[in-house]
Image (cartoon, rainbow, N blue to C red):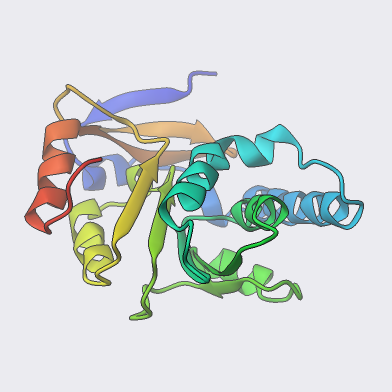
Length: 207
């Protein structure tokens, strides 16, 4: 099966050809539940988390250590953070740091995750809470109005926003369909200059 299917000028054109429930599908929600249980078991046994959960957070951990060396408590928002792999990775590796972890996710996943008694706050809408750093890993490509979303994120006046697993390059922005979790999901490939200029408009500078 091909990972990518067709090329569209915009997100709405791609949406007319999407199939399945994507990240609201039973398969996706079940995988998140299973991954959470796997991380909880590793944490309780004090064993290393499987690399498939931590690989996306290696650089984020490095930044937290470097940027907040002398801060007593760190407020973190993980946009599209799934079940919370980032939380488990940080709590294992930042034993001397006090931090609060909030995950912004789709309503169907938040509803399921809130049932678990773990110290993560799950939200489905951007709140006005003040954060020290916002993590955006593998999420912007799935958002139709990504520029509007960046506007909302920047209104929080967070000092740092960390983007990773970005589908950007020296290309003209286009949308495609991603064959993923038994669905065809609209997915952006973004012009890096267009993306960076949007953040520059909000007084954010690339480091």
